[in-house]
Image (cartoon, rainbow, N blue to C red; front, side, top):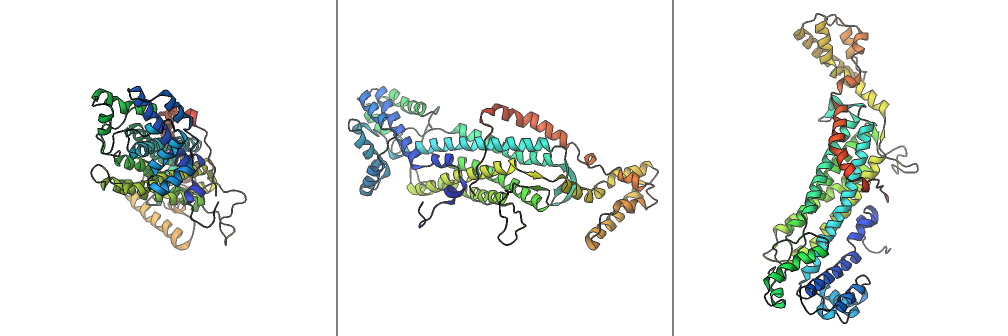
Length: 477
């Protein structure tokens, strides 16, 4: 590795080798050659004067790309596609005359982009489903563990640790729905020529409309797609890139929300992300255990969410049938969006798989706030014991304010129960009041909601995808 030039952190630190290969030059140019073979085969099958020997020669050199020849040629002609046509022709002298026949540069460029995005989405889908699977295990394991819930980050009615995890899971499930829809909608550009009119094929096939109509479907099938976009300019609509990267941005938003919650919970010492034995949390404060992986999720997620603007603006600013101001932007925004979301999902897998829960800390914080949340139940018990509901409501309000001042101004423990027990209006002993302090009484249907959500929504998805479960993530740094 050279240390005297910039290297992308996405490839050096975050993205997997699997995702990096999808957007590598090798994958790109091998796909170009597969597309040239598909075009030549289609043209031969539809009656052009192309021999089986020429096809076999092209297939023989589909993977052994002579990069040095292509690079030298590009210095001369300043055109990447024609440089690779030239290099391929050098290896296939008998077939060089029929390589790229009737096509324009976007035939290989745009079709390859669609193929790469489709394959990359499959990697994202696999990892996303595994994140959901790990969250499902976590939610099920902690579905009945009461914890203090927050609204406005202020103490609110309790929930359970598992129920909170279903909120993260549900957002990832929405992302999975979006991903599967967009991936299922992807089509190839096909081979439509300079402005999308297929004029060159009219010439090649002597105006035979029925034959020309067969070209795109045959190419699509050879490349593993059902069909091509029915109309285009020279390129496929750049709105396709917008839809794809919006899916990535949606996943990033879900990951960001989860990572923020984990960071806040780690501050409260209730839940922690994994922390390795020799890991250093701070260069100055040796005791620290920083949530660095969750922070990295948030950091990369912001990058992906903002990256979604690139294809949207590119799509909006394309002129007529083709303009080249999309190219440099696409080379950056689409691959790097995928590399970043790949790193994010690896981090999510690592964090969720190793989350550490501290029930004693969770219970202590919950019990410090529970008396306030139990006041309605206490008031009802006092009414049953002969009290006046309206008078008791006012007394509880006053005593709650007093207990709150004791906690916030004097640093004392919450003594609301003691204050209520000492007030004859309630006619309840401290022992009777303490019996109301079972946290499980205040979590509502949270455990049942977890069971029902996993059974009816999540588990069917996991069962349908059991062949891709079990993915583990390797975190580089």
